[in-house]
Image (cartoon, rainbow, N blue to C red):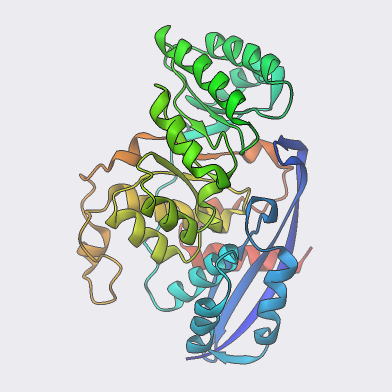
Length: 369
């Protein structure tokens, strides 16, 4: 199949800088790619790297695709490119893999839009969260995420206790340290979380308290406290996901689908091993968001042990019953981030459940920018 690959860049501005243990984040940059056949058939993908999270840079993604840009190529050549590119090019693997799977008719069917109570909303860091949660609660969110490891840990833990006690009892609160704690601070944080658990207002889980290189310490922490731990930066891409699972991690995996690697391979691995997965956003556009929701639906809802991705599978098999409930489906999706981005129209193709139509609309919008 002869193809032509084209790229268009986007830039998205945050309403206010997003502060994490990696520093402030002010602008989201990424690429939309289009694969077009000689007969005019098109498919779309998104490349949204986060280099400080462990992926390639945007410039590296452009450089590896430049030889193929606006030149006749074949799907076999792109397949070889994915196979030969470094593991940390996981955002490129996702975007190109997404577009190729659509052309081949292998991408999962679209997922229905989740309700607010199925989405975890991201709160601002620090004491600002004490007021911010109320507006999000009124929008229907019942799970919230709060980042720590940014300032003084003692003050953060005081704010944590105040925040958790201020939330309604049915609310869930998860924490994200982005690998910014040391071992002593991690024990402090988990001890505070365990105390909240004894009060009957538990923390759902703590994401990545320590850097990825301290895997053994993360394993030990997970066994020393009541509060659950989740891996995040440790499992940026599929290679790391496989590595941590192989080393024995059986806790929660926060999978940022749009930088996790080839979508079909991610789905296959998560389903085969019945992982406890929380799919999460990387501030992508509506195109990649819809794709990751389709991935999540496959992992959460499809019967494990059947090859629903195979080209020969019937429509009924591909859709599958919705009665299987893997352990991971109890967690709200980490996609409550739209309030952090300035309105730019790049997420508003919501009326297109079809990825191709959504991609076409986004491609045209970027051509007018």
